[in-house]
Image (cartoon, rainbow, N blue to C red; front, top):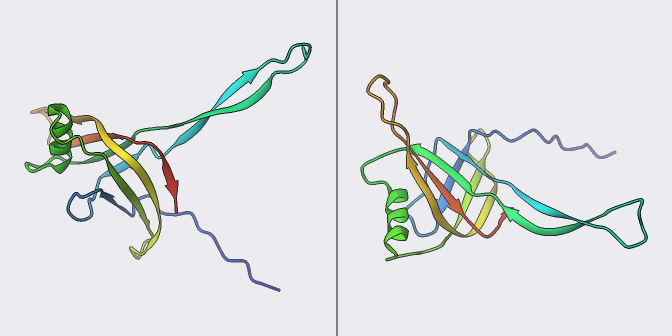
Length: 146
């Protein structure tokens, strides 16, 4: 009798990110927005008054949201500013790499043709002693798990 392999849930705190030609791996406080859904199209057929057929429509991809401490040389802000100026509107493929607790790669989310659609920095408040956090939203054309 074969022994079933145990499948533990993956830790959400062990990950790294690679975006296109940006130098090295990028590390973030958080990554969110790894989601997609298929639109449901209700269709009523003439004469069939007892049901509505639910057909699959187009698939929508949510933006990937990256958060990290804001630094003077932010590559994310440089990328966004290039898009705003229109002088380097480069789309990048990228990977969010899932690691296990020994930092071994166990899979990755890959996105295609991403571009920086929104950037912001957290509120500056003299009454708090917190780090400045920058947030970048990447709009893309699809994600896959591998």
